[in-house]
Image (tube, rainbow, N blue to C red):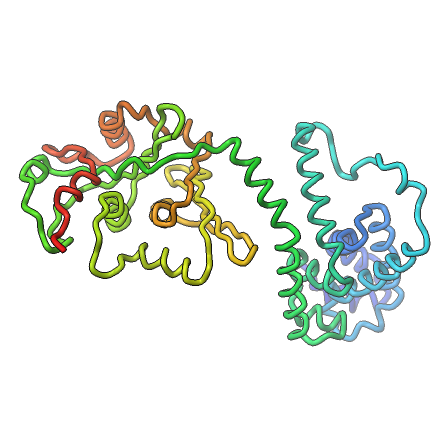
Length: 383
């Protein structure tokens, strides 16, 4: 049975040094990471963490709740880091002037030079943004969002009410978003080099030939429009001859086909309402990206912006595309995804049929692919 922190603390108090060694193995890395976030110097962070462990060992009798050893140790480390920061204001190291010290923990074989450079630049940007936060706010953000401590645990360390900590971290998040927005925008621009901008060419319907050829008269109800067995949204690259077919559900497919056919409903349809709602609360959809393919599932993100704050939200491609066409937002497909799942746009019907045969259930007889844009345009309800 693995002993708990409380059991180990009790053993240390009885003179068991090996028990403290186990505590060190469990929690030393967290203390180093926490101090590193405050000092941005790995060597100094290790020294401070070692001093915190030293003080914890000789002051362990002062720990009121043995089960909270980890939080108590972090509190000691934070206080020592604050003292180190105060000393920095009047002293400096000659090493800090050389500007070319080895990056701790970096092995050249782990990454290409340009990759490591970009990662180091981004890490430096984030650390500088965190470093501009007030000391108490900086430590609270790191301990809550990186180390996973609860507000109650942080409250015990800093003697600050949990409610106050929540307010501080909320303000810190806002400051970090504002500070990192420009970096995020530049990162998006760099990523777009490997992204392909696409247009929604059509929604293809696998329909009975008899139903499709019947061409019924215009109807007053959308529910009377001809059914389809399968729905595929076709994204065509703006440059080149590649297209990406994505199988979607009938509801999302119909909403997209209705929009492409410029069918106006008496009441707003679901995605029309969502687009109007976002606009009403001043949320802008910057772009949609189909960024990965896991097994047979496409993954997408919707990048939104409000009040200068940008966020990337996970979404189903069918939902994301429906919102993008209504908001006039650009749609991108990762180049690797296009290479892996894309088809020749000139051979779409035949290629779709081949894909259905290879990965899907047997195709229904006497069916064919039809353009959803044409089907819904020809059968627009009378309004």
